[in-house]
Length: 416
View 1: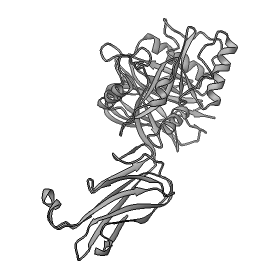
View 2 (view 1 turned 30 degrees about the vertical axis):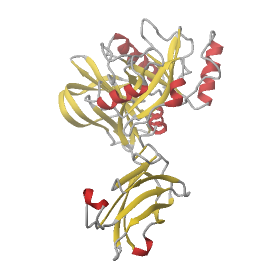
View 3 (view 1 turned 60 degrees about the vertical axis):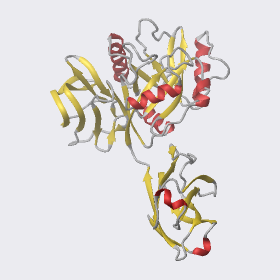
View 4 (view 1 turned 90 degrees about the vertical axis):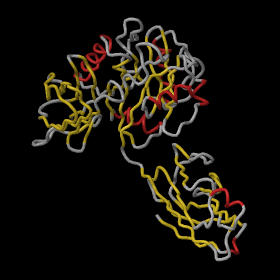
């Protein structure tokens, strides 16, 4: 959207606003502006020229920020903003450019404003769903971890410290990284991540009986938490509670691929065969920079409507995701008609399962259903686009292996 605005000499040394309309479903607003300056650089402070300042206000008239004439481009959004501007949900309505007519030549000046809207849309985000900091037994604080996450190419991280949530109340902000609040409920009978609620416990984390555990979990769920069972087949801290119906998601891949993860995948697959619909995730369980456990190994790839924590969690809960070895691992999409991973659909004659993969590195691609496992491609490299039949099955997911070792897997498409 281009807005041409003339500032006459009579407006010099005044402030006023220019309205513009923001449509529905906008995630981010960027405003650029330009105008004629007869002098630039250091000389503009002593010789006659035009100087026009800029700020922004939202649809309710709330002041969002001011940058003078220092920047010719500014942006605001729910998940990031230019320095000097507030992050704010970009609601539809009449917003305002704040004009500062600092210095205007006698003939006036024409200013061109270019307003750009970035709309909410499904996009792939890669993140680590299980990370620790100095708030429990990690070596990095949240800010240091955020910098490392950006260096690793991550879009989001879930800080899941053991049995405490103090850090969730003061998470740092990064332009291109989303922190998902979480707590790893660390119990002698199993570990669970409580995602999406800064303070998920009613009082403390303590539970000594099955009933107390269920009450604690129920309180967290009522507060809006999404709950995963972590490394359920780890021989050091397995899941030992009686009930397997208290969690919403299974962390089938924790840290380096190993026997415990293979067992977790098999456990989950057997659960699917009974008709349960259960999403999965994968996280590094990262604690410190040096060692076998590395940040972003593995990552969970989510197809989310935005980079906001709520949309990331919504995608995880819906199963619109896959797990891959790291940010350079295979990127996967399994679909059937309009449905894709996590969705429930009906089998239709003449419709095939569509497999889309990129970043394959001499890997074998398998389709896993309640009828068993079958190869779709062997030693595949780069991109893969394939179709395969879906007949008399209740679920299907992709499993990627290299020399027999799991390197990626998706959530299932479910069939009624």
